[in-house]
Structure formats: structure tokens, C-alpha cells
Image 1 (cartoon, rainbow, N blue to C red):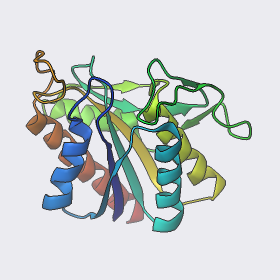
Image 2 (image 1 turned 45 degrees about the vertical axis):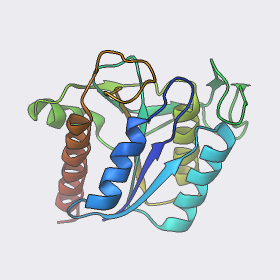
Image 3 (image 1 turned 60 degrees about the vertical axis):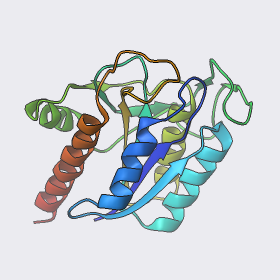
Image 4 (image 1 turned 180 degrees about the horizontal axis):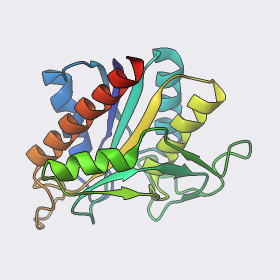
Length: 206
């Protein structure tokens, strides 16, 4: 399975984004059954959406698994949809703070074709806190997810795309804060999901 795995770099008070460290881990270790391409996206509305669109339209991927951090959460959030709306509470890394519709020609929302409920059950069965979410927020995570699903729809790509929000860990913030979820558990969660998605894909092709 040709898989694109993305994380995000630092922004705001997130000095060391766990999504980037998770992605970097898999760049080094790989994942069974997956031919991985790993990219760290900038926390920039325009550059992140442009980059994910380019990667998907040029890469011929079976799966795109996108990771971002939700610092206030203590569980893995499996995002079911991306909405056609920016509402940046803080500027991005390019000092842009957009608000309003993302794409006049795009749908109000795009939904993933991946069975989020099944994946959450798989995580919970593995002892990892997780939940289904129907809002990826209104910052760069949502923008990049929207751009990915829009590109897949517009270009009739075969790629399945899913976004995961991971909690903060021990190195996320400059000032010490309680650890929401250790990085090793977050890595385990991504391992479980990659294996589960591969198993579902294999069963569908039998």
C-alpha cells in the first residue's frame, strides 16, 4: 500500500509538534505493508494546502494519513470531515489569519471514506483513548484536510484520506504542562491504525 503520512511543524506555543515527531519516527522505522512517503507540513494555511494538493495529485497514493496536534485533548481524535471555513484564532507561521470560506467552488464539507468508527473501536480495544470527531477545527489542520479531500474529489483520485488529531506530550509546549498522552502511546496508535486500514483494504480486495 502506497501511503502518504504527514505531520505539522511548530506554531504558536507548540514548540515541538508531536505530529512531526510521530511522522519522523515512521520515516525511520517504516510500517509493515506500507510504502511510506513522509512529509512535515508548515503551519501555513496557503503552503500546507498547496503542498498536500501537490503531493496527492502527483503521488498516486492509496492512503493519506494526516496528523496534527490538539493540545487541549487527552485522546486520539479521528476526524470524519473537513469544513469549508477558516476562522484562525491566531496567525499562522506566515502571519496570515484568514476567516471565511476556503473555496467558492468546493463543497460545504467533505467526509472521509474511511470507517472512523471502526478505527476508534480498534484503538479502544488496544487500550488507547480515542473518539470520533466531526470537526477538525478552523485552523491549518482543517484547511489542509479540506484541501486534501477537495483534491481527491476534484481529480477523482483513488486515495483514501484520514486526519488524526493527537494530544500534547511531554515536549509539546515551552513551559511544562501535564502530559496528555506520552509520545510512545501516540506512535502505537498510528501503528494500530495503519495495520487496521491495511487489513480492511486487503479484505476488500479479496
